[in-house]
Length: 145
Image 1 (cartoon, one colour):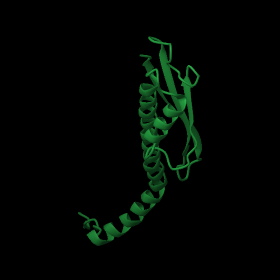
Image 2 (cartoon, one colour; image 1 turned 180 degrees about the vertical axis):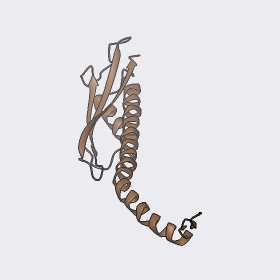
Image 3 (cartoon, one colour; image 1 turned 180 degrees about the horizontal axis):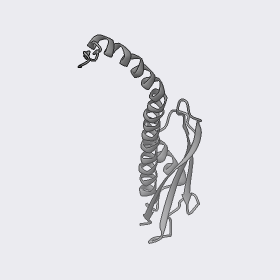
């Protein structure tokens, strides 16, 4: 004797979608903080990298001017500050070092090298993560004429 079989009950498409809606919300809630950290981390790294490149360019510009025997340390610092406009926020602290030191770094030093170094602190702030400070350094070196 054969027993009657019943076909398995199938869920309707609407009820299937309803049950998946809650799963998608939970997945979003779990992954959203990680996504926010990654996106803001990329943005903060990009800002720091851009500033680093700007510091290098400003230091090279200062070193190029410093390689001339008639240039003074004040003129070199002014050139570096002008080159940093738009790279660092207004009033942002920076340290400019010219080596060899003296009022005219390349006077009487033909063939030697002059180095200009620019340092600044950069705050890295990522939501849901701790903020920290990184010191960025730009360096330019030229031979004295």
